[in-house]
Structures are given as C-alpha cells and as structure tokens.
Amino acid sequence: MKKSLLALGAVLALTVIGCKKNESGNKSVIKTDSSETVVTDNNGKIDSVTQSSSTVDVNGQKIEKTDFVYKATDGTLVKVVFKNDPKESTVAITSNKKTFTLPKTESKGDETIYKKDDMTARVKGDSLHLEQGNNIIELKRTKI
Figure 1 (cartoon, rainbow, N blue to C red):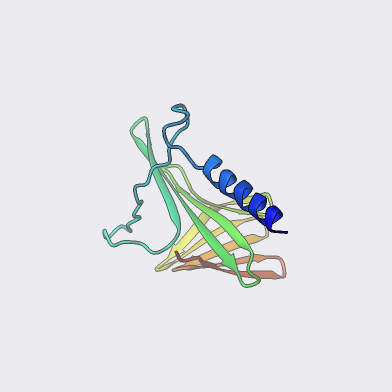
Figure 2 (figure 1 turned 30 degrees about the vertical axis):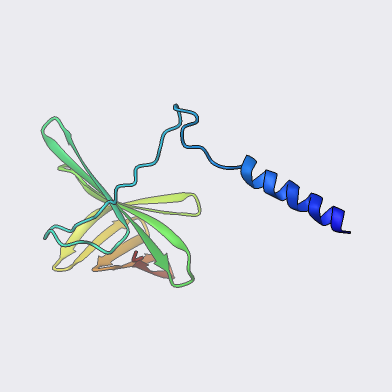
C-alpha cells in the first residue's frame, strides 16, 4: 500500500512539473490584448451597457452601427444592431439564428418606432417592445 501511494505521488509530481506552461514557446501564437475597453455614450460618460459601436466613412458619408445584447423576460438573449446611414436607419434583431431587419418609420421624443409588414419594434430607453401579430415580447438591455 505504501509503495503504491509513493508511486502515485511520484507520478503526480512528474505530471505537474511536465505540464508547466512556458511562455517562451511558439512565437507564432497571437497573444491576447490585455487592455481594457471602455465604452462611452454621446456625453462622454462611461456606459455600463454591453455594446459595440463602429463608424465607417464611405465616400464622405458616415455609417454608424451599434450592437447591443438584450434579454427577454424568459431569459433568452437577443442581439440587436442599430444601423444609421444617410439613406436609412434600421434595426436588426437576431435570435435563434433568425434575423429580422426593420426600417425606422418614426421617432417621437424619446421613442423610436421601426416597422416592416406585421412586425413593430418600439425602442424607448433601455427597453425594446417587439410586436408581431398577437405576440408581444419585452426586451431589456443587459448590463455589464
């Protein structure tokens, strides 16, 4: 019994020593960037919402895309992409590998309405109210 415990201890010690990570190994491996990304809103304040934003300048016209993650009341996560360019503004809602793109139809104060066929998305603050026929889905932006 003592010999088997001693042998097991030796094997474990060799395994730990043999599996030691070495940073000077393969130089072609890309190291991850450890810098922190801080997202700010239009007023320069740090935004606590998970968001990704990009602005592209194409022939002097700026196209802005902002991605958010929303959460439904049942816990389902939904990706929402707002796209603003000089021609049109749209919202793309992706869930269960399906994407619905709705053009902006009107804006009233702090509420923006996107509509296509029988689907309507009302965006107000951190909430998105999605209607399709008799189905109503409430979504809230997720926080970090």
